[in-house]
Amino acid sequence: MYRKYSDGIIEVITGPMFSGKSEELIKRIRILYYAEIPTLVIKPKIDNRFSKNEIISRNGTSIISYSASNTKEIKKLFQSKKYKALVIDEIQFFDESLIEYIDELANNGIRVIACGLDQDYKRRPFNIMANLMAISDDVLKLKAVCLICKNAASCSFRTSATDNTIEIGDTDKYEARCRQCHQKGMKKNKKN
Image (tube, rainbow, N blue to C red; front, side, top):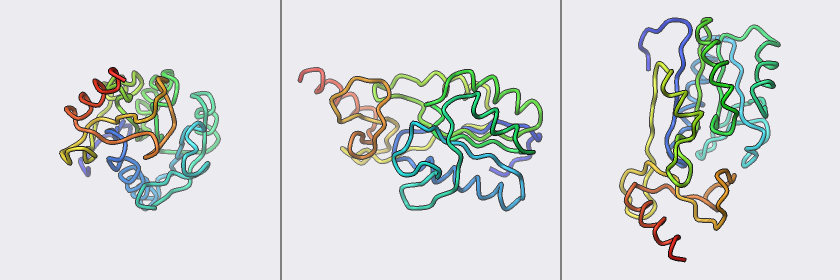
């Protein structure tokens, strides 16, 4: 984590639900604060599971954030002060035009840290995350624990009956699963 980089870099934190992404993100934000690097922290307005203006990890740590709905709102917030870093949580909920803006910021010496799911509940990549990982300088892919077999989990399995690509939820609608247990669960759901 403490490699020497240019001023402008893109870091990505990804993995399934329940893998500790928010905890890792909060840790990195605190390091930026300790280093006195002016940082804008953003979360999507659509994600109101725990708090409207905070990123909260499952172990209870939290950090104040702004909420935004799209790239335009993020640009407006970022341009309002002399920020040197931009942090975005749950990036899979934002529009793909954000990638171009993030790349532009990094090219202009801004550190960008993005956090979010790399796959939906059917294990299909979220395009914004796939494209962002391709241009990033550093990617950390975390694992959870499979709720079924207790092995390393790389997938988020939806237990609710809806078929929408995006459904905001927590343990009430999702479980961490390994590849094999995810596949078995998807086959079982198709039979029902």
